[in-house]
Length: 83
Image 1 (cartoon, helix red, strand yellow):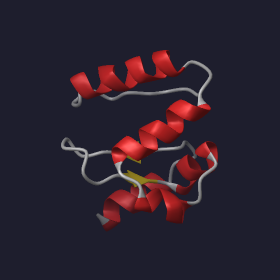
Image 2: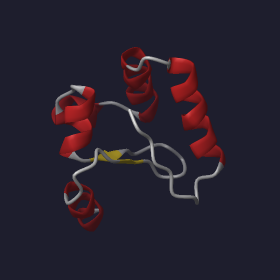
Image 3: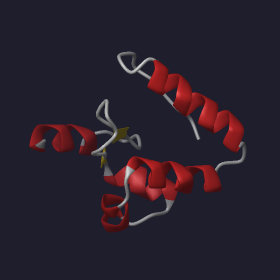
Image 4: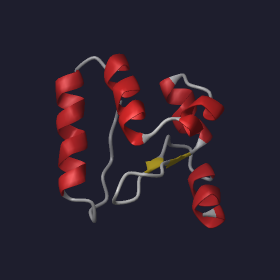
């Protein structure tokens, strides 16, 4: 977990990693900054709550949600999202 967190923080991009079962979410500080939420608050949220927060902030929630569902359908692929 420490290695994962260090790897996430090294990126200039906002990153969130969700294990296959969605129970634990890891993110970097840039992810928190992009979505305008403190890292401490994000750490308290589960994947569904983070998704709800994101959907409330994007211009096209339906398209964003479709992208999330596509990534969930193919979890072994690398996915990039631009917001």
